Amino acid sequence: MTNWLPDLTVGSGPLYQRLADSIETDIDRGVIGAGAKLPPQRDLAYDIGSTVGTIGRAYQLLRERGLVSGEVGRGTYVLGQRSDDTKTDLLASNPHVEGTRYIDAPSGKLRFDSTAAPDIGQGDIVADVLSRTAQDHPYEISSYTRDFPARWFEAGRSWLSRNSFRPTPDGIVPTLGTHAAVMAAIAALTTPGDTIAFEHLTYSQISRSAGLIGRRTALVTSDEDGIDPEDFERVCAQKHPKMMFLMPTAKNPTLVTLPATRREAIARVARQYNVVLIEDDLYGNLTDDPTPLLAEYAPERTIVAGGLSKSVAAGVRGGWLACPPAYRHRIRIAHKMLTGGLPFLLAEVCTRLVLSGQASEMRKRSIVEINARIAIVRATLAGFDFKAVDNVPFVWLTLPDPWLSGTFKNACLEHGVLIDDEDEFKAGRSEQVFHGVRFGVSQPQRREDIADGVGVIRRLLDEGRAGYDSFS
Image 1: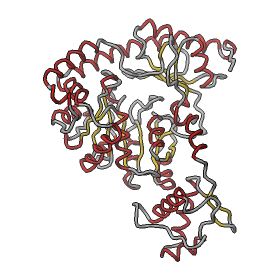
Image 2: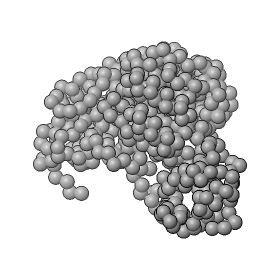
Image 3: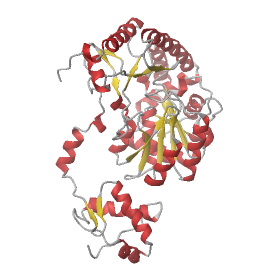
Image 4: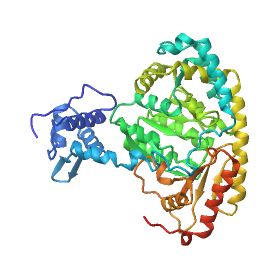
């Protein structure tokens, strides 16, 4: 192609990355059409005053993004783009966007596919706090939230503090739950086209949500001790992620807790490659694990997110994040743009629950109930390979031969129990097979329901595939 030069005056990062981003932008705009041949590397290096190596790295980045193909001796060509209709159709049926859960769950089934806080009588407490909030703040409830009172930040500081981690109020952002907190940080600190690193198995709704706003996913391998720091370094060197999402304590779905040595190594790699870390401590907040938070190893680049959904009440949508103060304003604005703003009523109710000590008391009661249910699981599934952790409301079950994750999920469904297969937690297109399923124990109302549901799981494991007919 002739008479084309990239615009390198916008964007950030090293020159090769800005060059790749500029070419991608021009491909998306139609300036560079499908099938077009990109300039030879030596020619483009001369035109923009760079080195051939820089151009080569940019072209390689474009290949990794699936935008171009190249052959030695022929050059680098732009791949064909899907039509808008095709993109729409693929989005509508893309399991990476939708996940494997039902949007509307079948009725009459035991819900083992949720980990919301168990019902321990929160309704009466929340109703009382709601009533008093409405009486005390009629004007604020009738209007939009323009100003955040200092007590909202203090509540977040209090709830997110764990072990030796003590965030300061000037780094707190109140949010509509932990998911919204994480997405606000992603939207504020990355741009479309940027890459975010995830483990192969994790809370994958973050990677799906990030994909919907134009962020790319890079996968980092893990083992029985959690994230592999060496592979994280490899991904940083090859994919140049701007951010990594991770759950160092009681990770969803595998319940792995990252040892201190690995947290320290991940912090070192993140600092070396200028990667922002998002530490989801939602389940960690339930545990007694003494390992220092990742934020203690890299406080200047770690964002800690948490909330009330797993330990107090999911329906109040209470959440906060703690970040370096320099990020706070951008994240607050991004949260408002993504969610429409924080409702005064919910924020005030969550603040009162925390500062009054009622949230901590409900957390204690939730933990007692969770542990009673986990005890049922341990007794019922004795002899099988599963992982359960005190205080945490889900179980990771490794399936025996010849069960496959999706097949076992379907078998449970036919017997009246909703669980999650491993694909629900894959952050991207992963070739790894884990032969595992996750089921929660907090959503059914009665312990008898837990016994019934886990009994179904036990019978299926005992019978094997021979006891299950699939008609699909």
